[in-house]
Image (tube, rainbow, N blue to C red; front, side):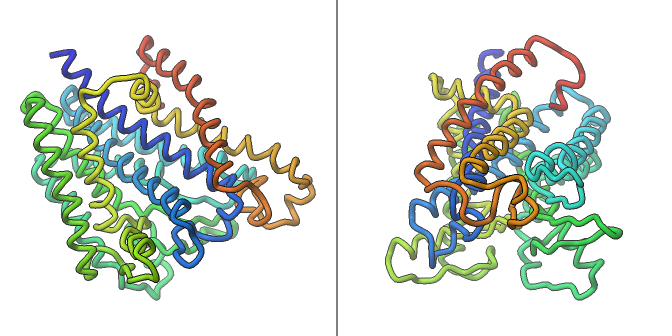
Length: 394
């Protein structure tokens, strides 16, 4: 039984490790691709299929990351009381929110003034954990239904607008994403990239799926359930997207060629995660979980390392990518004085006239993964051989 459980957990970690590696691709593109800050890779008027799919494949990262967080929470519920789990979720969630507002945000911006905050995926996971710390006392079926309702119904807010500034700010924090900048006090500004509730819905779906990894399900039952659920989500995406009615605020259109029509069909909304976006990303994730459970090789072992230390890896890869950006900044002829003159996306990352082609960006991405691997392997070994309480928070 222990070996079976180990395989189950490893399959989760391998899939998580895969999306962590892909996440680094997207963030490497942000810092090193020459057009990253002046155009969207999903802009069908200017993109190429290769650039589009470079962005599209990384769309799978955030929802699977959040979904697997929900799976892990269910697995923790098997060895913790409700009260213990609620306490852990609340403190872990609060810690993640604080981390997003401090050293994670700084890793992105290198802004020593801490006067502008972008609320991203770690923020959403932290807030969702805090919410789940209260919901965890409800029955399993209630959480399952709630996760489904949130994921399906939040697109009803697509056409709702708020004229009152306070209501608009709250709506952006919890349910919609307009990328507006809001001000608190005189100098503190923030932008919400990850509205909380849609991601909470995905975490609840992950918690629901976590039951498949309990002793109530045999390996064959779990595999069949994952295959059916994954195939159903993919089919739902295709049908609903073809109808072009509900589930995503951006309808697809027939373009000048079949290739670009397909790109339009796949170009669904991540912020916040639309119903169709969730179906498109979570469906293949469930299929991958079904297929990967009994697979083990050198490649999955590497991914397993990344997947076992996701928070450590997340922090590490942001700082590595941003620090690698600094020498390029000076090599390309910029100076410290330019930091106050030229428009910057992040510290040492000019908006325009900076970076490489998409091909070289991929080379930088591989280099980033190599640099991330050895510290991640060290920390995984340390975490496996030490039992301090704080290790569960990193």
